[in-house]
Length: 192
Image 1 (cartoon, helix red, strand yellow):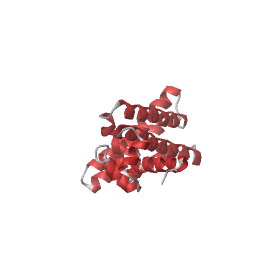
Image 2 (spheres, one colour):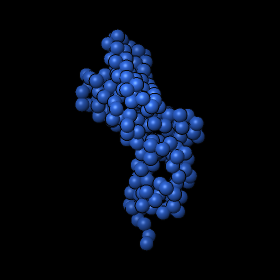
Image 3 (cartoon, helix red, strand yellow):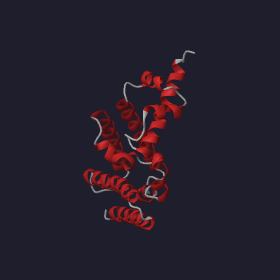
Image 4 (tube, rainbow, N blue to C red):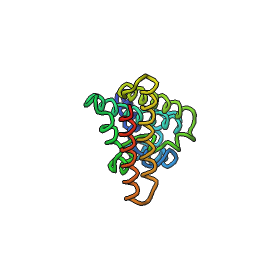
């Protein structure tokens, strides 16, 4: 049976969403094409009708995941444009730590991405720039330069705290790490 163009677009979208989640859970090298396509309910051969390679899939899946992360930040900004710290700090949580497949791309895949091909890193770089720009517009500061610096510090605190909290094997210590990061963000933004 022939697949319509609409069905092909829907299949591709389903594969990208699933790949973005599974890559964040398993790493870029922890997921095989056959496994992904089976989980998506599609044939392994159908993969190559949608993507030229696993690297192309990784680049597109990372771009989709970071676009979702950006949309979450933009939604937070809409909900309460005056409350950057409490809203962003809510991302530094046990729930977020425990669900890497649904959360921050860089907190899950930062090290993998750093070792990836340029196509993946380029997509991620574009997305991180957009997130920093979003946070910069939402960050009070005496100047645009200071607002941007605070935005970068805010984003990297979110990402870094989740990475470290996921890496340690002591749940109490992980909670302490997350709490310290939230408090650090509050201090950073009180400093003016």
